[in-house]
View 1 (cartoon, rainbow, N blue to C red):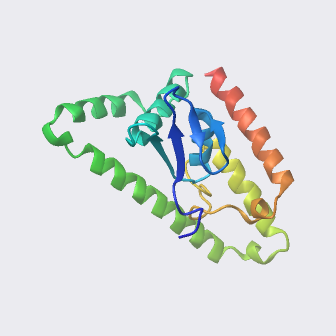
View 2: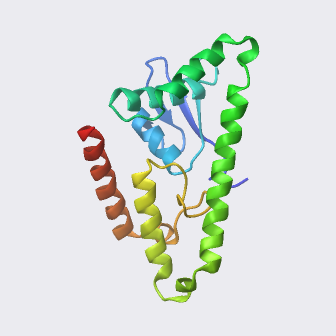
Length: 185
């Protein structure tokens, strides 16, 4: 299995610090959110007990974004989630949410494939770089809902793979703009 296909292992020490086992350095919740936005699966394990803490930390990331005024989930959805915990066995909400997100990812991929296949501009030199820039912009504006919203299935744009520094700079500028916009709300 390729290194990128395996979940990134993060170990939580007794001091509650989070340690990235791939890069041998400490990371923050925001770093973990960045890995996820880059379509990297993570697994967070308590070093002492071996317990999987991934779910707990992912919920904490969502809670922190909500507390900053970044409305991740509508209030009605949050109410439904709380209600689902009151139903013995958790009800159907978890399965419904998982299926809904899978359908969203699949439809995004299909739409991107259709648009690429039908787009005569795909033959124009430089189109791939332009498409990668558009994907980065959409990803930044949608908070990283998936690679290529609406651009393709969980893969890094070609310009990024070749170390496209211009693309990374644009991503940084868009992320800064998104932060400023979210603070205005």
